[in-house]
Image (cartoon, rainbow, N blue to C red; front, side):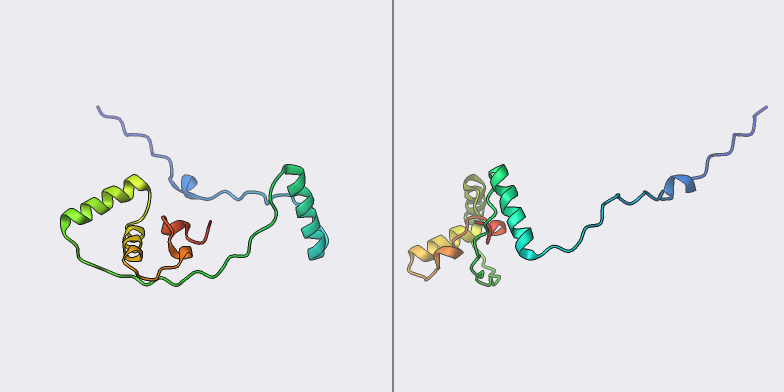
Length: 118
């Protein structure tokens, strides 16, 4: 004769989030900006790090441009893009620049995701 299976445990215990204690940070008083800056410089010098940030010039706004090219050209652009670790837009802009179009040096970035992080 078959026996009745035991009751399965509740899933509610696994789904509830158990509260954790907040980190124990010591409260500190307000510090003046020049005091924070001096401390940052001292830490940077002690660790050999640069604490000076160059002011960044504003980025040129980008505008999307869609073009249709032959399949073999698109394939060659993708392959060269992967080989040289540059975007297809970089290759197109470089070709346009060689043809006499005005493109500023700051806009000739091989990787658009690193644009502004030089």
